[in-house]
Length: 327
Image 1 (cartoon, rainbow, N blue to C red):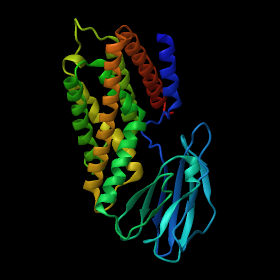
Image 2 (tube, helix red, strand yellow):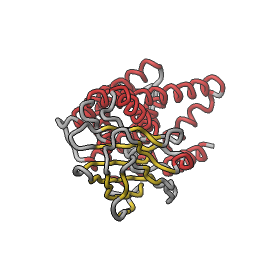
Image 3 (cartoon, rainbow, N blue to C red):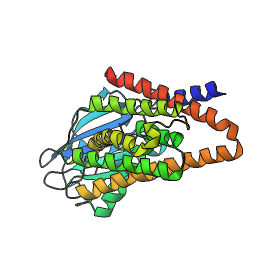
Image 4 (cartoon, rainbow, N blue to C red):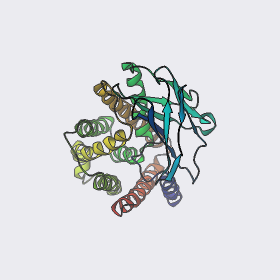
């Protein structure tokens, strides 16, 4: 039973993108070069060597004006093309055809000359979005909040790190204290990096993030109520220290999308709030699951926790080696 659970967790983890700080949705960017010329870039996530059959929908008066250059990235197909627009894009709609069938979200970034950058979010239910002359504050807040929730739910390294604390600690207060410390720490480096006052190279940061998950998985396996370790006696210290590094990872993901000019504080706040909402949801579901297990099948709690820790540790180990080797 334990071996089966561990194998299942490992297979699920390896099925996830190993570049865990890249965002799950597709991505499109329309950037103005001069009065009539724009550059279009779109990135489509690769899943099992397949990519959604998505085609850009451009605002009225705009059309692709040259060859489309396609290339294969580590986890996405990337396409670039010149676009010629004979009228203003404000008031037009941008989107993707085929989005309903693809069942994936799309992040859209529109960067006109001399006007604020705006970020929009497309869904299968709303495959196009209106380009505003100036993005509204609440539209920015909603878009970045959803992006934050998506990133914690599909940014698997941060998710596993938080889950390890649920497996390691007993008591809601201790779990909340650890997650709060993690929140405060990654908020500091997320904001500092985004605003340009902090910087670390992404490759070593991503390796250490994987190592932090492996460290916590080992702590779960070595847990001994008779001899609590530092991660149990003062989990907020461990969470805060590693949280500073995870903040650089969040900043890297947010950097892929960019921030709307004139609404940077709102976008940062909403993204961070979305990350925390995702974390709270994960912690509540995991804690409730363990509580039910203790109540109705107490004898299985320890085997399930150990199996989960082994699975998380093996996935983190694979991430660490891949990132260390530059894979």
